[in-house]
Image 1 (cartoon, helix red, strand yellow):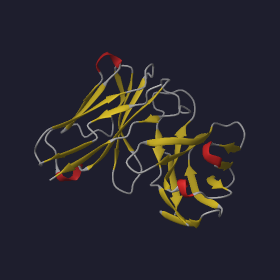
Image 2 (cartoon, rainbow over the protein chains, first blue to last red; image 1 turned 120 degrees about the vertical axis):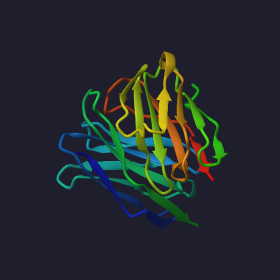
Image 3 (cartoon, chains in turn orange, red; image 1 turned 90 degrees about the horizontal axis):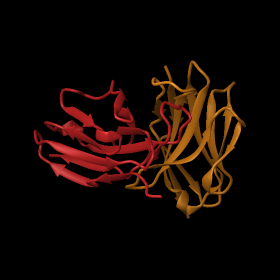
Length: 116
Length: 116
């Protein structure tokens, strides 16, 4: 069975500071991993995804994440936070390959606040 | 390209009343998902369609929830009768391919249901 754990339900950083949102996964098969962002009263939007190519994945809005198999982690980072980054961030894991049983499991989310 | 469209955006009903949500996916997307998102939580899959076929409805409470995707395009999710615990955001998503664990899902803005 797959699962994903996001450490910290709320993270607050100052504008211009490093953003680090933590995600650990559990999967019995090679996973696909995703980070989605959700702004208030909106649906989720893909930031980036890992699909077994490069372990360092670059996404939109200056975000990136590194897949570390030994640590079963896929932490999301951004060097310099902007006020517009304030949102809810969800890490997700999915089984690899084509299968009717393939499904995506979302973490419980981390709310990112940016201090002026 | 138009995104995933959902209606209504907000719905307030009294318990024991029926309610229906509608979703129009991105044109050409074969796979359609309905998710339930409780406050402060990540989305949880209710049902997944590949074209007209419901390939995963294991988490759908079938005693009160039903869904359909006629002609493999639009979809409707119904609750009858609604209970207080059904208050949540109902998200619809679509993806272009069938059964791929690597596919990006494109989310609609959701329907916020309040049951009084």
